[in-house]
Image 1 (cartoon, rainbow, N blue to C red):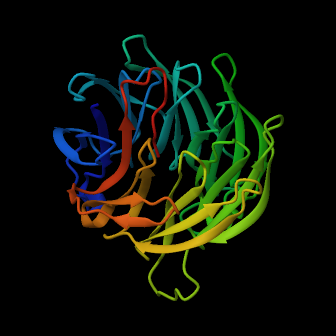
Image 2 (image 1 turned 180 degrees about the vertical axis):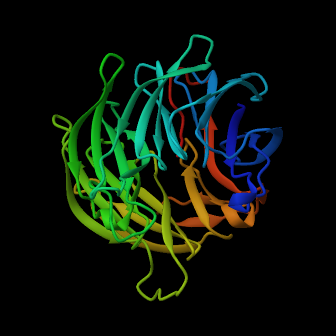
Amino acid sequence: MKHYVYVGSRTTRERNARGNGIEVYETDYSTGIWRHIQTVEGLENPSYLCMDKTHNYLYAVHGDQTHASALKIDHESGCLSLINTVDIHGQNPVYLIPDKSNQFILISCLGTENIVAVKRNSDGSLGNVAFNYHLPGAEEGKNSCPHQIFYDRHEKYLIVSAKGGRDITTGAKTGINVFTFSPEEGFLPVFTLGGRNLDECRHVAVHPNNRFVYQVNERRNVVISYLLNEETGEMIPFQTSQTLPDNCADPKLILASGIDITKDGRYLYVSNRGHDSVALFEADPISGKLSSLGFVPSMGDFPRFLGIDPESRFLYVANERSDNIAQYEIQKDGHLVLTSQKIRTGSPVCILFADFSIPFCTGRRI
């Protein structure tokens, strides 16, 4: 059966980037072999991608800019065609997802400390910004910058991880922010928590049981494990785990980055930029606590993203600065074995898997 993979990239000189746009590949989940079929050029920093719930349309945010784009997906070929690009009233958008009703695309904007809901039109195009919520800062003139907007498994709550400003002397006011969203009322805050906000809260992975949420904090390289109360949206921390080996004393700047969990919830993986490694964890099915399984090299420079294919057979690591994606086969015990496949692509920062045989689902995204 044909499956498709979409790779977002950085393209601009300001980012010292070598990407050409959105790269499209055909793949088979059983073999993991990728075959390149299209490059969608003319898009500046199409850095994060998502699909709507019908898998008929793909959406991209343009990193460092103030725009998002809609593209039509051809199910026969997997190829993309641009529909439109709109201003989203937010600078440096970094993450996006469809809302539960599939009427909006929800976007976190790192540069202007806001999350926005952009209306989807019936033809898949993007419309106007319908809702715009600004995250308050910890101090006057200091912003809380949302780095991700992510649903729990039941799509009841939106979990928004926030960072502070570019200087790290002031963190976000709250690193963890939980909202509900409705087409009538927009974003409604229900819970906030510090979340070690000076550590720069980045992304989360939600366990399949929807009880455990794992948040990676990029500075100080930790994963904070939380219990999610499905009735109230409250998140209670119960463990902090280091993503670097105990003997790591590298003088370079090291930033944890990507995080993902296998479909059975047994294994969790985190990438470390600068250290250029992947941390492996096993999650206890009862307590949710993580135990380290060790580390593997990312096989490239600056692994900004990692993600697991929908069958949890392979883990992929996008090494932004060395223009390659490393593929690992996930073993039954959670360990990773590097495959022989070499995927070369300019400045990759996002990988999105599409399976058109599964109707009305969101796919995997970062």
